[in-house]
Image (cartoon, rainbow, N blue to C red; front, side):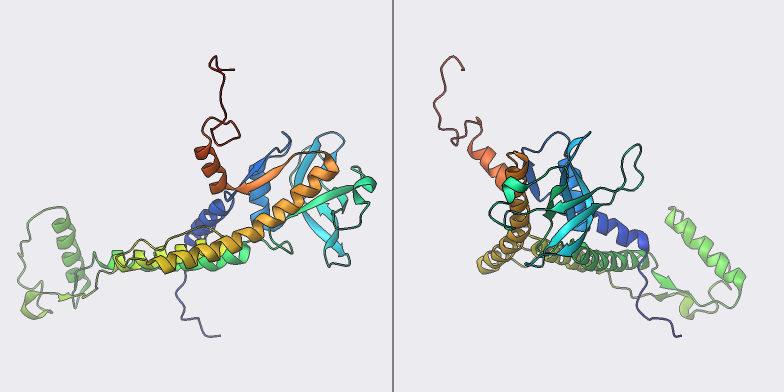
Length: 312
């Protein structure tokens, strides 16, 4: 079987960018009102990586969330049962099964909900898709662009190509250039050193330095990733200016994508609040930051509420 001519990308480069993209995805949303037993970082990290999380109540732990797999489908082609996936646990049950309940099941579902048997499924997107395909797509391209960057940077340090007839001449030229890099003067003492090269000179490698252009390409790939997953972005940081129409187009696209992920979390919040008596909410992280800036005093009225002069 013939070898592929596609350049091989080191696994560590792809892994580096895959983890970087997952970190960005894990911090799009801010959860409020979660019980102390429910870690928001685990919740978001698991959603973006695996697609499904089960919200359930344990008789010993209390309300909890765990990664899960799903089985069976209802009339709307939505899963009806979930089993948790919890490897490497200590003194805990590794498999917990719950029936999945939704507010859309039927009109009396709130009254028939049983916390010992039922739970709520939180989905990353409509049908539990993770962001793995998106991350793999862009992490490979980011790694490929960095491979091109490293290659160009490396060859920029090889200014000349010499032709030699013996290994001794090769070692002599390598030794000479190593001393030049250390700041020693370029002195030729052997008249036969460059006898195989015309005019006693090497051939310039002619490698063009294009690292700046490669960085522009990498920034463009990162911008496309952020558009695809829902970050607002005004364009890539490069010489060309991004016009107003491009910015508006990006905003429209990213808002529609992030709304898909947000909607699934809000659907789960409504079910959790109804079944478990909680007051959980989730927002896009940028919206939470903007609200705090508008209401720095935390009055709940954009800072316009009159405060008692005594501070009460």
